Length: 345
Image (cartoon, rainbow, N blue to C red; front, side, top):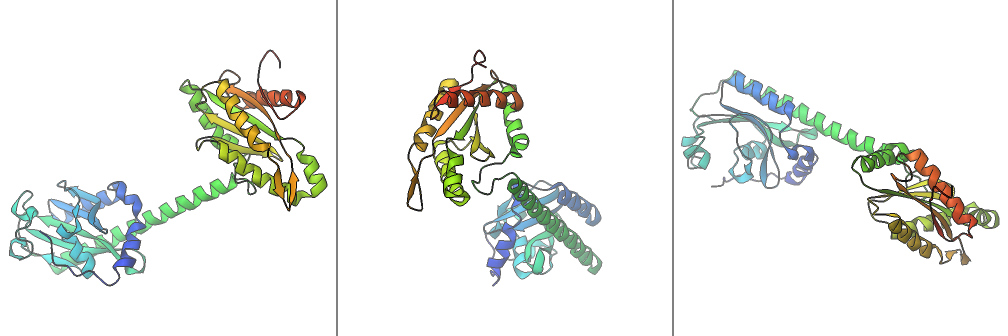
């Protein structure tokens, strides 16, 4: 049974504020649960909670005492607190026409008393309520009202801090990603070898999985820079990155090792034949000329291939061996792939 609650004029802005708290949707947070437990003791009630009201639901950010499930916001008394943006005290729910037949009044847990104060984010937007409920009717003194408002203020501060930490985490992750990204090709740069590749490689070795690596070198790239200039060379590299992406899976890791050299790390590569098949697709993608400023420019590939853990269980020996395979591909005439063989090294 829903309530007749007027939707506030700033509901769109309020919901934007609620969405900024998306981290709480994974479940109650320990700090807010502790605050609810403290309030339950202060007010001597069987239940206290910090609830967030979103488009459709009352979400529990922290609760103490009885275990109450999330519910439709139409069924939540906290919705009235949020929409009216003011303290609400209902001494006896059985005397409220819209609530006396509510399931939580007629049935378990048989609530009779409710008090709630708005929880707000920046700009004073109410996103939820700090509420206490009792299974017996009771009066609420002015001092108790003031105490509940203070609990709501503390909950508001904790939510704002949580939001700030979430945004800082996003910003930190963005800065970390930027520091590991080559600005020209948008592939990883060498700093990602330790930060990204080492972990993926060690996990593969620990779980008994193969981990392939290809080392790519663009044939004749130096002459492109010398003849047409670095700007044209950069355009060729950008197009090369597009061609590489078109062949790879989403899980494959590409690192621009420098200049026109790229390392591709291939998790869960079945065997050397799979690496050769991937290399052939890359070679085919680079056999078409690069069109820059109306000029057709050829820059094909030489590729070395190796497979961990057989050809190296850690990054340094693996890269050493795949570089040796690349040298073999170049020595054999370029525009081809060579697979590392310890007997040839």
